[in-house]
Each structure stands twice: as structure tokens, then as C-alpha cells.
Length: 219
Image (cartoon, rainbow, N blue to C red):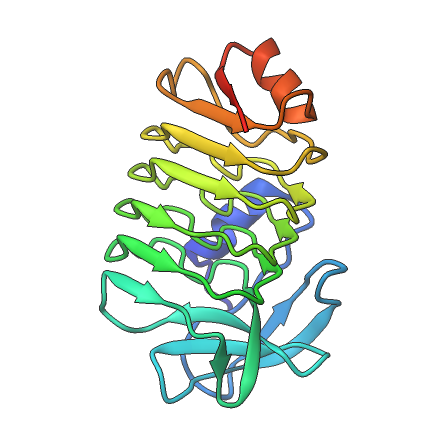
């Protein structure tokens, strides 16, 4: 019998195309993961535990995506290598609703931050996005109400809808890319009156921010 988890509930709301995934920490549980071109598609792979506090799924190219955290630390640094395999992604829902987290350091080599990866981490104040990141999927940081600043590196090509929805403490958003396009990220100048968007002059984000009443600074 299937149980409807919180992850599945939110994924269904965000998109009808979202695939339901099973939760759990056993080494033989099945988990279906759909990713984009930066990773390729991984279908019905096992979720593995490791000798750390992290769970992971294997990608087709021999790298892995962190799919969960079972530790109790508030400040964590995700390793760049687990069980001899390079970490290149944060899986959909990996840290969702982890209220213990306050500070997360992600390693260089990450190219993909999955759907709802940090959603509802209500105490999360700080997270770095590595320079290697290409894709940030929908609702990745939605509901992170304590998050006050984020830097989006130049290599990020796509940030999907609702990525920062509900981030009411947002004060500084630095976007280094000149070409990334706003796609309903959940930014609201009325909800986030103190938010300053720092980005390249003449960039698509600069034009959008000025048109929508945000304070901007030139990068």
C-alpha cells in the first residue's frame, strides 16, 4: 500500500508531472528520480546509506546525488565524495522540512539542486550555491523563512518557479549571470520590502527587477 508523504503532496501541487518518490532509509528501497540534461535521467535506482550521515542515489555516469540527511547537526558541509563517488547533485526533496539546519555548505562539483531540495527548512539562514551549479529546480528553497542572502553564480542557467517563495527574510540576492531569466521564482517586493537584488547592469534580471519595484545594485 502506498502512503502519501509530505514530499509527494508538495510535489503534486507544484507540478502534475512530478513523479512520486518513496521515502525511507533502507538500502533496498526503490526511488525514482528524474533529472535534467546536466545529469541525465536516472530511473528506479536504489537509495543507499553510507558511512556518513548522508543517503544518496547513483547517477548513470557513476556520480551520485545526495538524497537525504539523517544526522542531527545544525551546521553541515556536504562532502564532495561519498563511498568513493563524486557528489554532483542534491536530489529532489533531499533536505526538505529539516528544521534543525541553520547553515549548509555545498561542495564544488554540484551541478544540480533538485525540486524542493531545501523546502521548509525554516531555520536555514545560510547556504552557498557552488560555482559549478547549472540548474536550481522548482521550490528548491521555498519556505526557508530565515534565509536572508543568496548568491547565484554565473554558471547557473536556470532557476525554476517558486525557488524562493516564502523567503520572507530575504535581504540580499546576488545574481552573477547576465542571461538567467526570471521564471516566477516567488520574489515579491511587498513581502520582501528590504530585498536588494545585485546583478550586472543591463542584464535580464536587472531589467525585470527595476520593472517590478525592487531595489537594485550594479554588480
